[in-house]
Length: 230
Image (cartoon, rainbow, N blue to C red; front, side, top):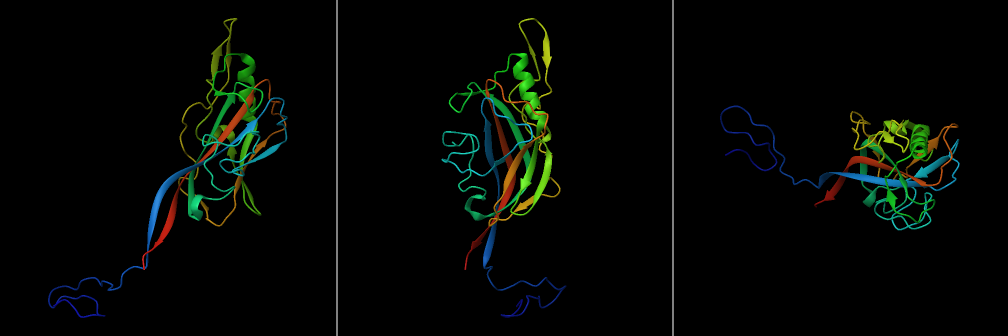
C-alpha cells in the first residue's frame, strides 16, 4: 500500500517518493503565438517633418490612420482599438516595420511595390530614415528604435536603374528582416491595458510626393489564457 487519503504517497519500503497532490487543478494555462498588425497611410502632399501618428488605434472595419476607406485585414487585425484580442495577456518579443507605396495619391489605388525612378527611391528612403517608433501607454511613452531597424523592411529594392543608365542607391531594409527586438525581455501587454505605437518623424523628413506611402507595423508575441476547469 502506497498511502492513505490526505497523506503523501510513500512506499512501504525503499526510498521516499515525491509528494503527489490528491486535488484536481482548478485552471489550466493555454499558450500560443500570434501576430498583431496596424497600418498608417500618408497620402499625397502630407507634411511629415516633426509630425507623429498613432497606430493600433483603429480596429478592423473602421476608418482611421490616414485611410478614407475602412481598414481591411491587410491593414489590421485588431478587434478593438488598442486592445489585445479576447482580453488575454500578451508578451511582445518582436517588432517589424514594413514600408511601401501605393500607385495613387489617395486611399483609392492598388498597393504596389514598383519603384523605378530616382524620385521614388529618394522619397521612400527619406521617409524611412526619418521615422522612429515609440510605445504609447496611458501615462508612459518608451522609444523603441528607428523605423528601418525594426525587422522587415519595405517593398522597394535599394538600387534601381534609370533611363539614363545611372543607378540610384537607396539603402532599403527590404524583405523579411530578422526579429531582434525584445527576445530576452518581452514587453508585457496585459489584456486590460490600452496601448498604441507612435510613428514619429524627424524635422528633415520629406513631404510625401505624387504617391501614397504606407507603413505597416507588426507585433510578434505570445499570449497566455487561463481556462477554468472546476
